[in-house]
Length: 221
Length: 348
Ligand SMILES: [Zn+2]
View 1 (cartoon, rainbow over the protein chains, first blue to last red):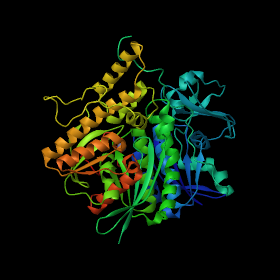
View 2: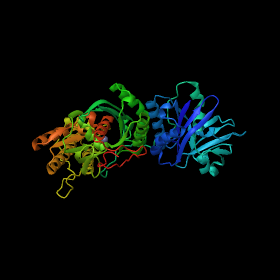
View 3: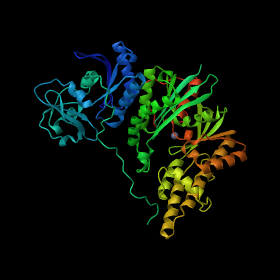
View 4: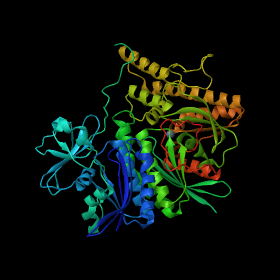
């Protein structure tokens, strides 16, 4: 089946066309730009460019896979709104994947467990822990780097580069989710033929908003 | 051959999807106008919380579009062009609608237009009252804007004559409602209380009406403070606050300034038609006073029905239809939403 994968949960604006079946997973075309302020501008043009490279039209797609974060709110929503609208307009299912799982899927597996850390801004990281086989065993969480309690010593994701010292990890590749990683993380759901879970963003934080307490006086009491 | 235009709005706290039919003779017919509002989620904060609104937009976007197509009895493949609010508005909120609109336009392979929310408030009137005359004065009043606009051509030429220098009229309503312990948003409860009150009970100030003030600008911050002072003074004196009289007197001050300046601008510019739109246009005193003063001045008054005045997708579809009919340029797929889009940029 032919899948469009998109992710805007990190500073990378990622789109790719991936062919997937029980045996194989092949990236047919992708377009990635690292620019934290251009998610809304670039994600749809990137999806089109990836399709062009793959030599397909969007009408030929069978499904969409979308990273649902965790990710800083505004950029994350650009990709998710795009995935939701493409799914509606093309009449194809959209499958959510945890963006950290997509990064984990691309980690070269050794005999050791690993973490995935991404930049949550405000001096915090989104993180999850994976076993040696790449199955998520903790997270996703959002915390200050120094508060990440773990005995695991290697971490993928751009947060690992930013906070290597604070968390006490050695950074490993990759930094961002790739189309192949996204589809790989959604593979079981894609091939099961089951209806996808809803596209619900993993915000992990509540909106910043304070309820007013009483009314402000304009005259001195 | 008529064309179907889809309009998407997400500039504040309403997720709107509208569908209209643009006929060859330029008339625009409303087919669907679906809105999902997050207003209840903002009530306890006393104002729109941008992050809460943006989250609600993402959740509501596709379901709202689905409802619009079901209401209109149309298929997505029937759409000939898409218009989306490119600004002004809340950045994170705009981004959701713009991202979805780009995806819809790309998937359906139809042209996309990034259009101005404020112009949409004027264009929506054509859905109810037919084509606009060649020159119109528009008074936009809502929680986010208070402006007097000269509209030479709804698709290509709008000029701002004046705007608020501080609070929007609707914002003043929200703040005064808080002072009076009335719920948010403040427009409807103040209007309701005002109907039972005496509009000349308290002489609240008329902002920006002095001889040296800008002729067509507005200010509501002083009025809001005057109301708060008056209420606090009354409370301090141990008397019960006459909520209905305060509401009526406040509302009278707002309606008086808005209509006086609008009529003056119309005369000044030689304009024979006034359109009042935006959420506050539904206010009973504003519309009755405007009707009275327009009739006296020989000005035709057009006020869209309340459902069309508040933020919705139909207004964006309507503006999109006029922009399509005028053969305006299509927006590039990588355009950015602009939270501060100036009113003279009707489409990108
Ligand atoms: Zn508005």
